[in-house]
Image: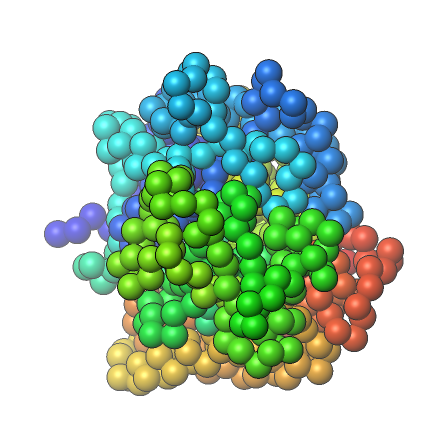
Length: 551
Ligand code: SIN
């Protein structure tokens, strides 16, 4: 008989760099349950190729230059004190990861501290500390090893967090008020055994990652369905800047790929001299920015989008052959091999590329300690909005932010005396009144339609009229999905689609609110920056759908 109810000090939802780092720390002071809705390794971290942006002492780089690059890229929406806090912490992040066993790439025949530092768009110095082109995978594997070995950590794979537990789950608790909300853990669906478990925790960390799967083309793994944003929003937390979806300029164009994830061609390829050509074999990036291939991502992605529209073609080319076979195989072994497996030898041929949804800069609002609006609920990694990235994220600043904030969250919880915290009694999941009506085609259909809708109507270049249409359609879909959710047993597919519909609605509504073009949000009707919008777009549910406060 499967155990249905758990009590723990810490519940960590998500197994990317943020969740794993926090879990390893938290296990030094209490019991940790960490859940992953799939296999633990299936994360955006695992797919991250680039690296970690960090100033290495003894180089021509400086903290103030890294801060300057981050603020410039964030186009007026970064919180400067957060930027300073994270970037000053970056050298420590590298040293902590090294101590944990991560082996960063070094220059040949050099000393221990002589990291091979790559260059990426928007950076004024070479500061991307990396492990060839599989940085995230190496980090993920190292951290997971620590998790497996730790007796204070219980890892539950294939456990899908359905909703956060709050006062609203207590028997006889009134629907209102929506102030002073507390988190007590989460209901989680054990997808293998199809039972819902109640995990009661003194502190919960949301580290659920991205929402890239809302788009038809994405670099994100298939698990990135925006679950954390949706759960936090439903529980009453404020969510900021959901219109700021970053499109990576270069993923491998492959019309036959049937998986949700497109294969990333790291920005490091352009950082190492890769050149973009349109289908007529003309270089085009200098038309759009003096920085050429190394312009900020929003500009490069929009430039490609414009070239595709102008030529009517389906992809542009990225060329790195001139670096020579030996160099390419050493610097980009993963990209080289993965392309070769798909029949493309990048040492001989140009790489057909297109942009794809990559990273969302908005998220659940947290303070400098990673605390959300909800008592006992922390968030870090991509799901969190710390104010670090602003309106556009500088390349390779995300693993940095995730690790740094996981540490900041831990430093905060460490000060709290957990032994005195009492936990409420939460009723088991109630699924009386539901039965499988066998209409699962609704889910399959809406999943496909929603992703196409987001790509076509809420993509790289937006317009008010398309956004309004998208909102109407998403709300209609949301009602159908919610109705299905209430009448059928919970399963991973419906939970994901429900969350995707919530997040799509938040994203479109946020985009409609920002009547300007700034960073990642480009609105044809308002093509310039407007200083009146030099602030975050904030959404908060009052518990009733549509009743939303925008500020
Ligand atoms: C890349 O390797 O291009 C991704 C790096 C990032 O998104 O920060």
